[in-house]
Each structure stands twice: as C-alpha cells, then as structure tokens.
Length: 439
Ligand SMILES: Cc1cc2nc3c(=O)[nH]c(=O)nc-3n(C[C@H](O)[C@H](O)[C@H](O)COP(=O)(O)OP(=O)(O)OC[C@H]3O[C@@H](n4cnc5c(N)ncnc54)[C@H](O)[C@@H]3O)c2cc1C
Ligand SMILES: NC(=O)c1ccc[n+]([C@@H]2O[C@H](COP(=O)([O-])OP(=O)(O)OC[C@H]3O[C@@H](n4cnc5c(N)ncnc54)[C@H](OP(=O)(O)O)[C@@H]3O)[C@@H](O)[C@H]2O)c1
Image 1 (cartoon, protein in one colour):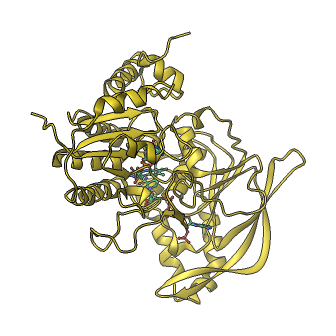
Image 2 (image 1 turned 90 degrees about the horizontal axis):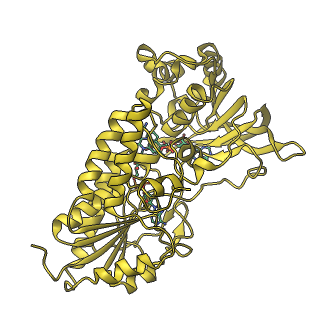
Image 3 (image 1 turned 180 degrees about the horizontal axis):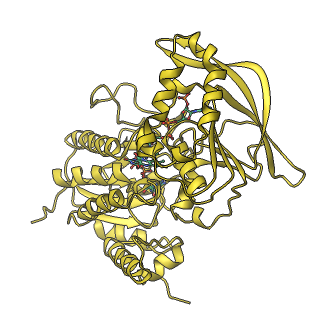
C-alpha cells in the first residue's frame, strides 16, 4: 500500500546516477519524479557507450527497465530542467518538491578558448559521441570528418572516437595529440584492442624515441611505457580499414587555422616538456610551435557541467557546499542551495565508469534522505505535477511510452535482421510511441 504522506523528491536526469539514485530513494519510501531531457532514459549508457557494446548496453537497459517499473517512481522524458529549460528549479520547488537531486551529467562544453575553435571541422567529443550514438538533435547535425583527423586527449573517449573514425568513417589518419607523455595516457587496454591493429607501431617507436630524453629527465622508463601501450596487441580486433593511427606526445593545441571558407586546414601545436610536481607530472610549453595538416580536430579532454542549469559553476563543476551537513567519505553532495543535491557526473564531471556513477547517485540519494529526515512528509500533489508537465506545450514521455518505444525498436531490429535498432530522431520516436501523428 502506498502511504498518503511521503517525502517528495525530484531527480533531474535519468542517466545511471539518476536512475540508481531514484531507485535508492524510492526503496527508502520517497515518492520520486524523474525529469529527463532525452526521450529515453539511460544517459551516456544509452548515448555514450560505444554502439556495438550490445551485451553491456542491453544488460544496463534491463536494469533501467526494472527501475522504471518501481510503482512510487514517475518518469517525464523530453523535459529539460534549467534556467532556460522547460521547467526551472523554482518551478520544481513550486510543485511541492522537498528536495531536488541533480544528476544531469556534464552537458557543458570544455572549450579551451583557442583561436579557430569555431571553424568547421572543430568539434567536442561529446557532440561526436552523441552523433554516432543517435541522440537527437546531434544525430541530425552535419559533421565533417576529413581524411586526417586530430583527436586531443589520451582517455577512453579519445579511443572511442578513434574507434569510430577508423572502423566506421575509415579516414586516412587519426593522430592522438597528448599533452603529456606515454606514461600519463589514461585509456584502458581493453579499449585499445578495438584500434591497435590500426596503430602505426613504427611511428610509435620513433615518437617514443623522440620523447625519451624528456621522460628520462623525470625518471620515467620509455620502454616500459611503450610495452604498456602495446599490451592490447594479443587481443587486437582485426582492422577493417587502412586508417593510420598514431600518437603525438608532449604537444598541446594552441590554435586552429582555416581557409577562406571557414574550414579547418591545420592545427598548431606547442611542444611540451614534463615537470615533476607533487608525485605527478605537469606539461610545460617550450614555446616551440609546429603545424599538422588536418581537416578535423576533436577535443576529447573531458566535459564540464551545464552553465545554464541554474546552479553556480566553478571551473568545470557545480559549486558544492564546502561544509556539507551530510558528507560521505569526505565528499559533499550538496549544492549551495539547501534543498538541491548533486550526484554522478553532475557532482564530478567526466569521472569514471557507469559503476562509479551508480554508486555516486546512490550516495547522493542517501544524503537527500538524511536531509528529508529534517522535514515532515507531505501529501504529494501528483495531479498538479502531471498537469504542469502537460501544459508545457510539447510531447512529454511517460513510463508506458518508453515501453512502447522499446518494443517498437526491438520489432524494427528483428525486421531488419539487426542486433539492435535505434530511432535517431525525435519525430520517429514520438510516432513510435503514438505521441505524434505519422505524416
Ligand atoms: C563516450 C563515452 C563512452 C563511455 N563508455 C563507457 C563504457 O563503455 N563503460 C562504462 O562503464 N562507462 C562508460 N562511460 C562512462 C559512463 O557513461 C558514465 O560514467 C555515466 O553515464 C555517467 O552517468 P550520469 O548519470 O552521471 O550522467 P549521464 O549518463 O550523462 O546522464 C545524464 C542524464 O541527464 C539528462 N539531462 C541532462 N541535462 C538535463 C536537464 N537540463 N534537464 C533534465 N535532464 C537532463 C540527460 O538526458 C541524461 O539522461 C562512457 C562515457 C563516455 C562519455
Ligand atoms: N569504454 C570505456 O570504458 C569508456 C569510454 C569512454 C569514457 N570512459 C570513462 O569516462 C570518463 C571520461 O573519459 P575522458 O576520456 O573524457 O576523460 P579522461 O580519462 O580524464 O581523459 C581526458 C584526457 O584529456 C586530456 N586533457 C584534459 N584537459 C586537457 C587540456 N586542457 N589540453 C589537452 N589535453 C587535456 C587529459 O590529459 P591529462 O592527463 O594531462 O590531464 C587526458 O589525457 C573516464 O572515467 C573514462 O574511463 C570509459
């Protein structure tokens, strides 16, 4: 039986942090309403994880489905919250929500403010990832993947983009531009397996040789770093293109150069050295500059939170209360507003795998629950919430609609003989759910 008096909580964002966080709160007895920008739940698990990781994606979808079936949890998809969104934080408060948990991921773009960032052919990894994962509106945008592409960064996102460029776009060359050296790369061996057959090993050896004196100056072992990068070789996935994948270590982009039509033609790099600092290293520019001929530059350097959300932002993150009332493991899950909490990539941008986001969302919910114990349960005005959402003047997606969409996609995959099928525009999704007429 559902109690008449409950705590009422809004969870903003239905990625792994929001979904597992919502489950925690619902299990504790709160009435939870999830608002999600995308039509579908899942966040980056749906629209970030590489499309062909079918087993992982379907396993996560199954867990998300179970969460969506929890009776004291409502879902409103296609609803953006924020100062320029469909609902503001104040709108949410006015609907009677006693606490707001923000698990909206890190949707801002971490541009470096370099000249030429606005040229055609210069992109941020998140947009490219959303594009090839079929998330509207990115799935409908034109991208220019040229013959020679530079990807800035040395994390797993850089490898995912390289995977896409070498196995789908089949470009001529992918150059990973890394500001520090071979020791500081952050990607995992497993992800390297997808692209290592395209790696130009001779070029890697020349590059390791080139940067060896700089590495040795900070007591690094170049050959050990080389071996670590090549660890994925025994399990290399056979290549499907002649794309040449190579690294440019110890280099930072300083400007992008375009032609008279505003199209990227070159990226200018500044060479770096390594400086030992507090047991780690830092990249320091030498002033020496050189240019690479490229038609595409993709920044895979991590993300920042959405500055237009309505919460103060400092550096790449929402400002957290420095003296949290309910810290967990020394971390603050509290914003500077007493009733607004943060979890997952909204608490710490670009940090870790789905399992980390799941734990973080769950922790954030534990904090929300502790806060709620200082309040009285209320009689949630669920009808008023439903009416407000209905009045937004756009199709709003409910739990049962998501089920219809999933069923339609499964049927479409079977019809086409595919492992999985995904609608990549909102109209088709809305039509599949019966929320928009077919034209
Ligand atoms: C390219 C890429 C590949 C990855 N691959 C893997 C992998 O293979 N394995 C793995 O374990 N991890 C992987 N990760 C990491 C994993 O995806 C993240 O750890 C996790 O998704 C973060 O969860 P989150 O809920 O904090 O944010 P997100 O997953 O980003 O979810 C945010 C949710 O908030 C919603 N939202 C955003 N703004 C608003 C708003 N204003 N109002 C309402 N809703 C909003 C979005 O629609 C979305 O549903 C990958 C990440 C990236 C970027
Ligand atoms: N398949 C998977 O399992 C998978 C796939 C994608 C993402 N993920 C996870 O998602 C998280 C985010 O991944 P990510 O690749 O975005 O982040 P990441 O692992 O933190 O890597 C970011 C890279 O960008 C570099 N960088 C940052 N700022 C820079 C700047 N101003 N100029 C030049 N380079 C800069 C970093 O270099 P420094 O080291 O010098 O800072 C680093 O090499 C990670 O936890 C990752 O494991 C997992």
